[in-house]
Amino acid sequence: MTYELNVDDVERIAALPAVREAATAGARLVALWPLTAAMHMDNDAKYAENLQVRVTRAFARILTGEDVTVPDAEFVYEGADAIPGRPQLIVDALLAANDAYDAMADFSETGDASLVDDAVEALGVEWSDEVSVRVHEVLESLEAAMDAGEFDSGVYAVGSQEGDGLEKASDSEAGESADAAPTDDDFQPSVALVDAVAHRFAAGLTVFDALIGAVVGDVTVGEEESVTEGGVGVGSGADDAVKAVLPLMLVINELNEQLAVPRIALNDEQIRELLETRAKVIVGDGDEVPVGVRTSVDAVAGFVSPLAAGEWAKHREDVLWDPAAAKKKAKEEDEKRNKEALAAKFAHIKAEP
Image (cartoon, rainbow, N blue to C red):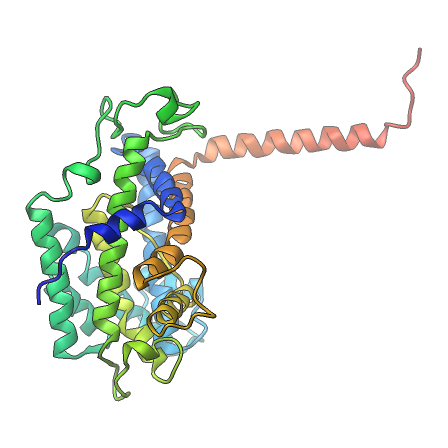
């Protein structure tokens, strides 16, 4: 059965306040591209390295149930295949997570769904043939839509404004900072760009939800029992389901890349909570379902969007970070605090007439 993106879902999700807020943060980030300053390009490369460390650490924590630390993940990312004093189980899980991460690296360029199978194998997760077929159907349908240019026009289109990736907007559309450069703190993107990012982000979230549904409906991990969608996050086998969706955390970032949407990262607790939140909608747990959430897509969008907004704001901050300016600002703030402290100390002394 061929998957078809539900345009009504995309429109509804794109209009959600949390999605719009995330889209604004995303638009402020993508407006920086193409990066031209060497410092910004170096900063972005460091962000990408840090992102891989964070993602692989989250994966290893889920795969092992151990307290995998940031230094653990950094050591393995830098090439270590053993860490003195640390369990080899942790190192092996980090190595597997990095192999999966690297296996998916070309997906955004090729759209080759077999790369997902490579990531699944690297992580030691076992998908049934039915699960693999369903995932491939979703991805191949989306790739066909991309090849047909469906995301290059209409609500998904991003305009251009003198090369900065923005569409020319009036003051009312862009806000008070209409003349600010994308690197300025008070820069606000045009409504046109925010709309485009919101719809692309919504499309990605809709596909993400479909992929989760494809996987958690019939999953086995190792020798553990099959997991049904109704039991995800709330019953036995929940850990298996969490492990089984790890490849999808890589897929969504590759899809985002194709859709010109920035990457995201969820830690291990957030991945578990995402599945639990979604499961409450699936099983119809009315007392636990967040207000306003009607479908699993709404649940996924409501949970992921605030995290994406924070991630994209931090990504922008990281790209624009200037060590010299930061040092100067810190020095100025120290001097200001010292002056205020000195003034307070001698405040009781009256000036001579």
